[in-house]
Length: 76
Image (cartoon, rainbow, N blue to C red; front, side, top):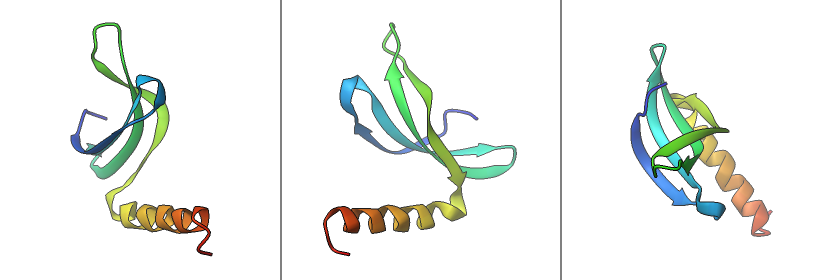
């Protein structure tokens, strides 16, 4: 899977970043949510920590995360 187009990024502890990118792999449009680190030269490198899902499933993932957020906030 290539680098892809960055959709969003947030800082994580320890100098790591969580990046959301749009990619194509083997003809499938994917959304990748992955932890990245900076190597010794300062270049961002992906870790194995993350998920890649089909683009059409991304809305379902957002809904799932919103449901979890509501539960964490004690709404359900």
